[in-house]
Image (tube, rainbow over all chains, first blue to last red; front, side, top):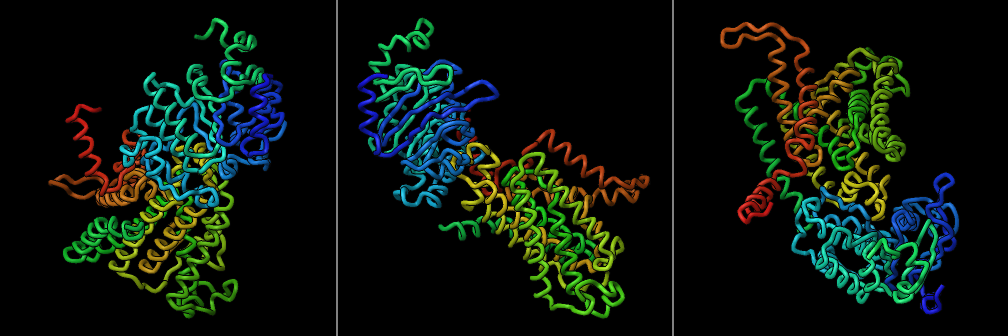
Length: 256
Length: 349
């Protein structure tokens, strides 16, 4: 791995956030995630890229408790969340969005956020900082659609609502699974600004999966590259761009 | 406005509709109509109880009538005078043939027993999802029915339990129904209600937002059982006579048809469906007896009411699976319509 990324990583070491140690997940004999050790420190924006089927979403599912962990350990602020179910992971501060949008389509926009805020006020009271439902909508710039039924919103707004909802958990780490999927260039640009503003405003770490390399390279301070379930490279954007292994599995001719 | 006063405001319209309908029946109707209206209100309370769990959790429930049966039988056994019980259930277990409680204690104990059964069954059922949950609820109905039929010393078995004092009249049922509407609306808009609706909408996302699925389902299950039990008690203390079949499949299907037709996702759906199905049911019941209409002597057709309920369920599931009200309360209809019209004028879809 590359030196500079290691330096960043060691700088955030002990400062809290998400940390996985040799995490593995297999289905039958096939490893979806193999020996993955990553960290997302407070205030960091970390990218996770890799070709289709590399195991990125599986890793997110394992971290958020949607899939059980077969090997290794996952910690939030040094506390193991390895064996916790999805809802308990959320209460420990793991918030996420989904690749295929999963808003509560029959609830209105406010109620979508309310679901998460209720959890935060009940189980994460020490992290809550007095923001109301409308504040989270404001942060994502979707306050104008607050009374609408979520299922009637345009695609890009639904993605923003998912992030607003995740924020209302007052997370320690925010997992964004392809937040810019299906967005045009302008929307992607605006989303990038919004995510950066989260970074300025809150102290949690953000882990972003996306296929849009320009998006990831511009947004993230560090990037992990996954292939065949394993981390094959790790570094700052410039290093990832220059890494021959990465170019081979990911950039080489097939993309961009 | 707090949720409590806001919900009270949102209950005014249904309260006016329900009380108005009852007043019309009392002013213009015959005793027979008053009877039909009373039973309508007990059914409405049971449908509201069903809505609280099924409508918010999106888990089909076929067992809610069990709670009406438990509460109905409990109040009948506790409240019927000792002299009558000596003839009905001599030597009843726990010495129940020798004691009779006052009205209020009998109702409270009956509700307590219902809530206890709801808690125990709910602890098991709230862990289940989808088909397993639905079959589990139906099993509960069958279990309660089998107990009512076979615990002859306590319930008289399949024979009718008669002689229960007739206490309540139509205004009582209207009052209870309005309170039930308020309770159902309050739960729907509460934090637990919104979280439960989230689990019914997208279970995985609800878990990812930290929702304790079992806990919110259990709360709704118990609250629903409370309303269904209240409906059973009101029915028993009006009818004076109950039998295990008063609380079994035909009652289950009647109330399910009401909820599905109206739309289970909203309290207004429960009310709307109850009204429409109750009216339709009475029309078909009169047709069953082969009346003469416009000089045509119609043949007797027993079973028409069952046919009607089945048709209501099939047709609404086919053509309007979300029910007449969909996701809306009555008070949401006009703003939603206006928003849609405004959107159309601006050329939005």
